[in-house]
Length: 176
Image (cartoon, rainbow, N blue to C red; front, side, top):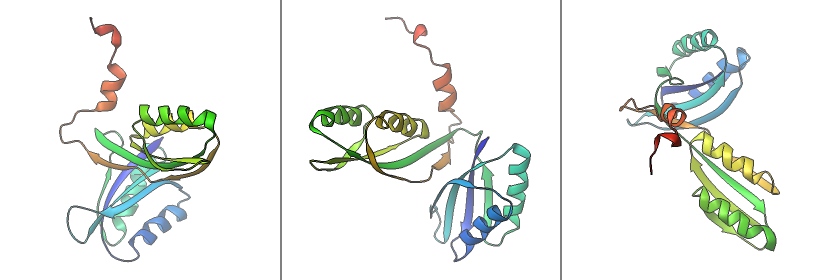
């Protein structure tokens, strides 16, 4: 199972190296990683996606706490969260495909950040499901390059789980 960990660290050199070393020694691959300043100066938030069962992830969290400069580790996998990713897609375009690609961009609220006679570059921001969906659609075109950030996430204080709402929503319950 894929887990999302949110780690608060002191913003000092070597902390990311120690974390990645711990994962490497234990044979774990980090699927995605995003690091940036947190709400307090001198503190950074690391958001990472890692595969493993619950027991293994619990052990990994205990090991993370043993590292210096680690302030807090939270497994936010099952908590109501706001998750976002950013992807840049550079796609080969021809006169025939350009209008279809522009329609796809419009539907997914993607920004066109570069256009030429031979390519179109889209910026897409959203939850991992949206990123997956547009990537599936764009795979039928010649994708020249992809650059993708790691997932960032914050726990929702409202405790509203939008993933749960998506799965329970039914058009049958709407009367027109």
